[in-house]
Image (cartoon, rainbow, N blue to C red; front, side):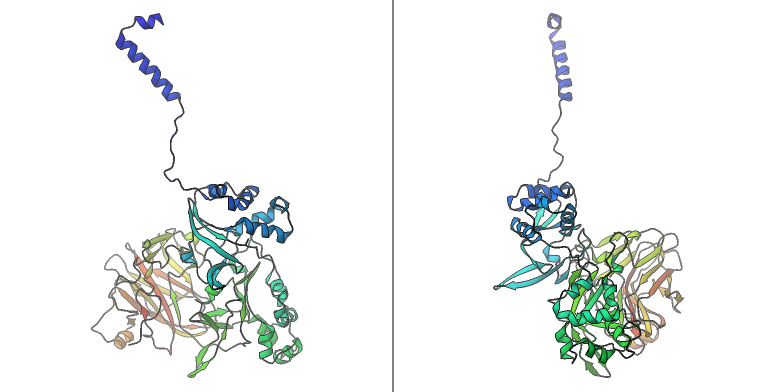
Length: 563
């Protein structure tokens, strides 16, 4: 110390400064790592007493750390009162008395791996499934003069759109329950469906509807959809018991025989895949388990009508789906209720308008897909798509008019499917699964947004068969000088209204669809496209139908008014 004091003052000061600097560097610094003070879901629940039981549920199931991480989640959050009612229903004194596996299923059913506000709810299923794998269904109800939103027909939303750091919370008054009964069991437990249950059993379809889904190996294609009708619907048709049903429909007297008309009567009410009302409403034709038979569907205001058609100028009244009872989830599918008895109808060719953008993978982008003001472009990887395949590994892009109808030059719905470079080594031989097309003869039209340079010719194939005409993506539509019927005779038309020179439509050929169902439409570039390619709509119009009308509403979701 004395030696230190003998040093010159400037040197002493420098030495002290260096020592202090060393100590400062050895001290742990408190660094603020985030500028967002909003609590994540787990911390929000820990901080709110009225949700303490669901917070405990997250801890027991080890989901608490997961729900405290960065992400975009939606949580349907039961109150403590709702949790107590759940414990009472299952006969447990506390959450620790319930098997952990059951609690984990409950947690997963209440969480969606995407942020969804109530503005995205419809009267039907939410587009994104829960972490459990089952879809949740929302709707509006009126109790004692007050309107509220329900979830799975049982729980009411008490508080909605609570923003948290990693998503959004909707508070509900009941615990959602996992649908653990098969379609067969769900139907059988409803006494109003006793005759329909008997019909399922004598035709062998009960066993089919009773098969559980293996969630580890099966996807949405493994599920089934049932259009059931209750005893009153049968009675109104003069059928009071199973013997009268067999007498009316079992022409071979062998209900187990797939060719027996009673077996066909039942199989006609069973649809492949998981199809909620929201799916049926946008499907003009529904494939059934009855071979080569389909059910037509159309939306009339808020009612879905089955098999309502105009035949030879006469309206054939359809059968409504009972919306209030339908969208009933089972472990292996979904159950709907038909209002009345209906029979198999011979289907005539009907137009199919296939919007290239209308893919489930794009539809699940609920904050972007056809939302005004949202980002104009969203690209998705090849591995995500189920019904679209292509060569190369480039993504494909959902490209839309951000204002939805505010810019002339976009097609139907105000969107197009964008291929960055439609060429060998990038995206080429892109194939689409079409909606259901009823057997018959059709003219095929492909509409697109034209380019001035850097694009070229495209061949079109239907189920692997090349169609006679190619598409030149450099061709713009003639907007005024050629009459529409003359333009049609040359294989072109103005498919949107108001017309834009940028949007062109090309007749690529006539096809003979021999089997009702989904088919494959393939587009193949014939040159090195170095610019973007924009696809709008593929139209399959019966050959005896007017090929110009109806036109599509440019930027809108419907058809343009007739001239």
